[in-house]
Each structure stands twice: as structure tokens, then as C-alpha cells.
Length: 420
Image (cartoon, rainbow, N blue to C red; front, top):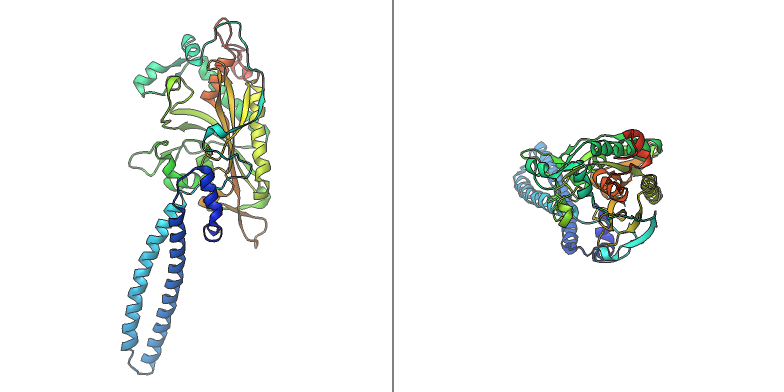
């Protein structure tokens, strides 16, 4: 959620952001509702003061033995007017809050302006794209030939885009998680295994719910949703709290399964484990001081890069354009890993600075001294590893001529083997 002062004092900033994002949003209606709710606050306050004054006048007249009938009749009219205005105020506030909660975040000035992903910018690349002296396969063929993934039985059991990991791929999946947690713990991240379900208030604090209704799973007859990422649970864990400034930044490493409907996948993505309904992920999540959040953003990206460099997976960094940017983010870098079997780069990391957009919704503030005015902290998030996508990159980039898979060096100690 943006600072409400912007709507009142500088709506053109919002109008420019909406144009750059290519987002349809009724800003004029929001401005109108904001003006109306401010007027209603003034009018209801005036009527309450008038009613209180009349009540005192009635008491004074009765005390002096005078008739207060005319004032009582007038106060009844004022009370009826106040009741009508209070209902109007409640409805106007509800309409305003519902609309303002769907408004996107501001866009950082360094973000390229464009309508879609064609305007994204390659920031840098790392690693050498592997060359093979044999006909390579994609991860679907590799994993099925080695008996590492069972897609057919998963489809029978749960439907499309589910999977059974088997044998050494189970161990490799767990190795990625263990390595990621060890890696972040060494960098002073606090390890968190959050709730895998959250209520609607928590969800709406972390995301724009209307945009995610078709993405996340709702628990029937419960005020609960399965998380699409541990970011949502971690964002909400400090809701309605005032943090100590001396404790910032607070860095969390969240590990959890993630559940997503993943509508719109096509081609081979429907059959493999790259785009699936459930997967494990280790996530970076940081609460930072406003003046430090951009430095923290770059640090989170560097940590993710270091992780993939250790795995020796070639990648490139993409700066997302305004039209491709998620609505809660002010700036996002994606890391796209080279997938040899697909002969293309594919996204495996998203690293975003959300400024105070989430923390305003969740009322998460900080202060340095007890008597000091509070400020909203900034929140940032970044994938470290979404395991299924990284498994795809490992299988395709490290496949061998004899049909096996080389295990990246940092993972070998967890498997006790250098090949699968």
C-alpha cells in the first residue's frame, strides 16, 4: 500500500506509475473516495461536537427548571443525521480501502520503462554455456531414463504438473535445501520454517489478493490459504509490531513447500518438473531501514549469484521492465539459468525490493528510541533456490555422455557421491 498522502498531495506520481506499468486502475475514483471520506470525517466530528454541546445545554436547562423539549427535538435530528453520515463513512472507507489495496507499488527510477518482458534488460552474465560432444536430452528424458521422476503415476494420483521424485533425485533435492540453509546460516540469516497456511489478512498484507486468486490454493470452508512462497508467511510474522531500530536489518532464510496453480503453462513445461503445482524453496527475506534497503537489495542479489556460482550453473541477470514488474515490487532482478536441454535461459530467482508497500499493509514499523516517532521498515525478498527448477538446470547442464548426471561439488558431501 502506498502512502495515502500521495493520493491527496501528488496524484500525478501515481498516474505516471500506472502508465509506466501499463496497469488499468481507477485513480480518479480513488481520489474522489479519498476526498469524500475526508469530508465525512469533518462532518461527523462537527455533528458529534454539536450533539455534545446540546447534551450539556439540555442538562443545564433541566437543572434550572426550564423546558428542554426544543433542544431535545433538535438533538434527535442531529443524531439521525450523524447516524446516516456514520453509515456513509463506513461504506466510503470500505470502498476506499478495497480500491487502495489493489493499487501497485511505485517504480524505482532505474527500472526500464516498457510494456512487457521484451523491455527487460540484461545486466550481466556469468559462466560458460556448456558444450557437448553428444546428443543431449532435456530433464524429462534424463530423469525418466534414470528412474528419477514418475510423472505418469503422479498424474494418476494428483493430476497434471505433479510428480514423484525418486531415488537419488530425492537426495539431490534435499541436498539443495541443506546446502542453501547452511549457505545462508553462514551469512547470518536466521532460519525459519513458517506455517504452510495463512489467513486472508496475512495474505492480503503480503500480496494484492485480487491478482493471486487464480494462483493460490484456498482451503475450503476455512480462512486459510496454502502459501505460494514462504515470503508471505514471513512478511506477516511481524504484523502490528514496532521493531527495534538497532536490530535492523533482520534477515530470514525461509524454507517451505510452495503451492501454486501455475495456470498458463504450455508445451514441455506441462510435463516436466520446471513449472509445477508444488515444490520446495529456500527464500531470503529481509526487513531493512529505508535508507539501507537498496544496498540490501544488491546484497541479496549477490548472495543468490554466489550460490549459483558455487553450483557452477551459468546464468544471466535480468532487470525487469515496468510492464513486467510484479505489482508489489519497486524493482526486481531475475536470475535466469541456462538450461542446456532447452537451449535457453529460464528464470530460477526473483529478487525484489518492495520498499514500505508490504509493511504499510501489515503495520510493521521501527524506531530507535522509545519516545521517537515510528517509521515503516522496508521489506525485500529473493529466491535462493526453488529446488525443482535448479534440479532441471543440474540435470540438463551436467548430463554425461553415458547418460548420468554429475553432482555439483557443494552437494557431493550431502549425497556421498559425485554422480547419479
